[in-house]
Amino acid sequence: MALWAGTAGVGVFAHREQAYPSPLLQLVLPLLVLAVAVPAGRTRPGAAVFLANAVVASGLADPTTTASPYLAALAVQACLLGLRSDRTAPALLLFGACAATDLALCAVLGVGAVYWFYAMSFIPAALLLPWLAGRYLQARRALVHEGWQRARDLEQRQRSVAEQARLRERNRIAADMHDSLGHELSLIALRAGALELSPTLTGQDRADLAVLRAAVSDAVGHLRDTIGVLRDGSEGQESLASSVEPVEELVARTRESGVTVHLRREEAARALPPLVDRSAYRVVQESLTNAIKHAPGSTVRVDIARQADRTEVRVTNSAAPNAPAPTPAAVPPSGAGRAAGHRGLTGLRERVRLLGGTLHAAPREGGFEVLATLPDQVNPKHSTHPRTSGEPQEETAPESALRLTAARRSTRRRFAAAFAAPVGLGLLTLVSCAYLAQQLTTCVLRPVDFAALRPGQDRVEVARLLPERQFRYVPDAVRALPAPPGTDCSYYRSNGNLLDDQVDLYRLCYEGSRLVAKDVLPG
Image 1 (cartoon, rainbow, N blue to C red):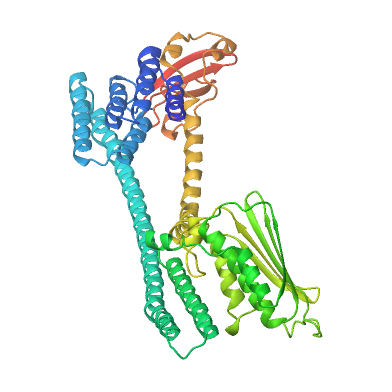
Image 2: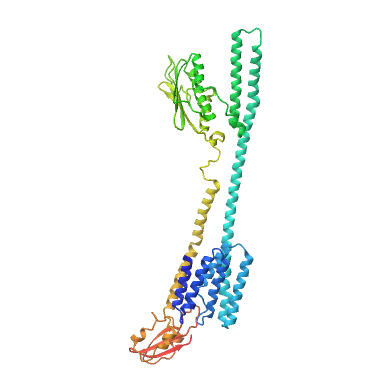
């Protein structure tokens, strides 16, 4: 609607300045044709160009001017044709058909040479140049789109390569653990089983060896579960489903070793995902181990609280008897209960983080506290695809998008800097041209009104048929033509054609308040 309104405004303004206006043929019909062409151009840009050319060609029948105010509408439709269609041959055939139609109309009407020049220069220029500009814009837009699409594809491929390398490294680590540590543990279990059959052992020795063999078997099972965490796929997921002993049995065995442990559970146990159940067990196990090692003789409290969507495991040990309270220097950075090599709580914290939970370990009231919060629903992305600091985060915009935004900003700045001066000069020129056009079109005395003037009429009566202002740019040779003596003369243009520099002038000469002469001076 805005495009149609702009082209219609040009046509309405030009129609007001016509010497012999024809509202139906010069205004109503062209605007109706453009009202059809503009919306049709979205799906059929070729048809819109042909209709706009027909409107422009109809101006060749105007005997007063060759220029058509709808030439701008033709140029806009030609530009949209280049922007919306990537086919060259149909566009050139369309332009040839338009040119043939225009020239055939000139031949049928028998117009003068200026009309032939108009049909062979201005109209083809309004077709070809905007169409080439539209083609350039379309090609540039497609090039930019394909370039950034290529960048996104390469970025995605790079992420895929990094992910595959990460998975290969995890599988390699899992294979190394299985082949080395798993083999050694199996040999230990085999040798312990062989020692049970030795006739020189006592019953207590055989019982101890049975316990050792069972512990080694459990270690092999735990190793298999750890390998399952490292590996991706269904095999790893099935290995994680192995069960562990309840926390109650772990606490009972710890009491049998002479440690004071109090267990409190809130609400009845519900079925949990294997990873969550195993992680809760590992939190209690690691905390009890650390309390026995770093605070022997202390009292340990184990609280397991179940809530709607998470489980809280809190293990607190008191200060060791006859031992000073732990100080920051005496407590390891991640907690007093760290295993050899300071890996105990670090590994436990990583296990909890992979499930989407949190773990806090810190001194409390002379002792130490470990608090783990585990979600009941495990996010697969946390459990099987842990992210490292070097991997791209989903929340971060991809590099290609950031570079595209920066390139667009730089392009806008360069475009503004490169075209600021030309655009300013062009605007100044347009303002000057508009002012000159306004000056030339508001001093036109229509031939019909000139013919209605009669010498002897009063100046006030004559002023009713005159335009807003007189023509100020009368050549000196015209002013030198003889006029009735003692008269005051004013000059007017006979038509509003801005491209014609030989327009006839009307001269009206007054004596006092009476019109005494009117003349037509050749341009």
